[in-house]
Amino acid sequence: MSQPRAIPGRMRREFASFYVDSYPAVARALSVTLGDPDLGTEAADEAMARCYSHWSKVQQYENPAGWVFRVGLNWARSLRRRLARRPTGHRSEAEVEPTVADPEIHRALMDLDVALRGVVVCRFLLDWSVKQTAEALDIRPGTVKSRTARALESLENKLYHYKNER
Image 1: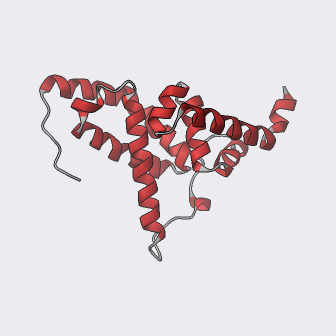
Image 2: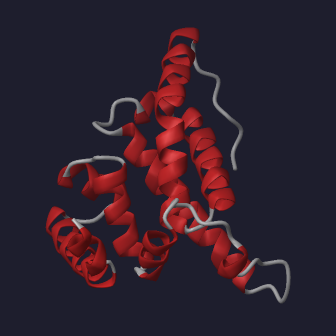
Image 3: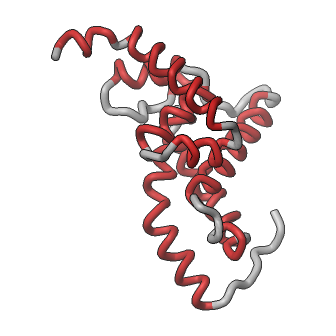
């Protein structure tokens, strides 16, 4: 990674405010999307560091947290690919603590492909619009809608008994 750029005091304060407001939600969203709380936190840390380096540009985006989420997700995917090529040192998903309190919901989410899980997390955990989700994941709004529909159908099939309990 390149050297962090020095930013003026006012911009540092704006970034600090953004960090305090956005970090917890982005870190949790990455943890759920990736299925690993430690990797999610590490990805959020890396993405926020990169955001700081590019704050003069990122702060102008409609959804800077979406940029951070996408950068963190891409970084984590890249890390996983590099670790997968190594013979040892990678934890299996069975060793990872659940990122959602209800184990059945956690399993149903983890059964989703990461692309579908990312859309669900952005739309429902982060409460982002279709447009914000599309920008954060660098996909088209129609893709967000179709992935959301597929993910919800899958979740509904796996969690149908919750619906019947009400």
